[in-house]
Length: 316
Image 1: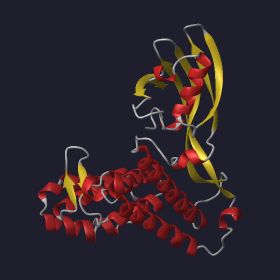
Image 2: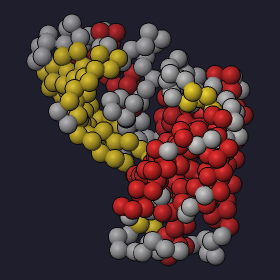
Image 3: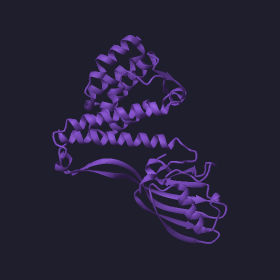
Image 4: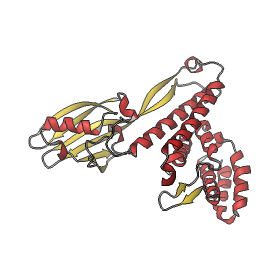
């Protein structure tokens, strides 16, 4: 494995020494012919470096201060390979890298000119995602494969212990809660092998996760008043209790029953009502995770904060 990775490190280092046409030939004929399931951290970095360089030369990507590359043309050379990696690799960390690349190249890092028609970008992504899901399902000999193998489609979450405090000139509230990031996934009973049926389920799970992350990443970009609820707010999230400690005007301690998909504005309103203070005073939240404390604004000046509970803190 070390020798295998050393080759990709060497290819990456010599990238700038190669002529553009040579880079393209190496990328198309050799790198894209590698098995997506065997991708490692080093090979992924190498493939991505050649992907960026080749598409810059073709004027499909353009270098910029931030992000490093922006998409000028959505028909990117080698883009489908990253879709293959995210569905076929057995390593979750590699799948996450591929998912991030697909999200960035599909919308997040697309030039403002192309974002003037977001519908076409969304339509292209959805069609690609759906066609791959359809392809996986059509290859299945039995629609009950998931049930027979002891698998089920469920809502899962990643739990992080947090300490949250809301500050105002009148009161200080501290809440300890468990923050859950809701996601769609296919869970498997421990001990079952991955090949054959398991690979199909892995592809379905990854494509559903990609679709969910795409929707969430688009909705988070919108910071104005909403006339339509964000997708996650259309259903009840994971239940959680927020413990609030008030220091002034009088000491008080209470719990709020909430859930991950409740809006921050609604939580603020309930805290303010209990403390008998103006909700506008509750403008700063301090989220503590793993001993580190970050402050984020809860009020954007455009009305009640529409973000959801799980979007506050490290998940932003």
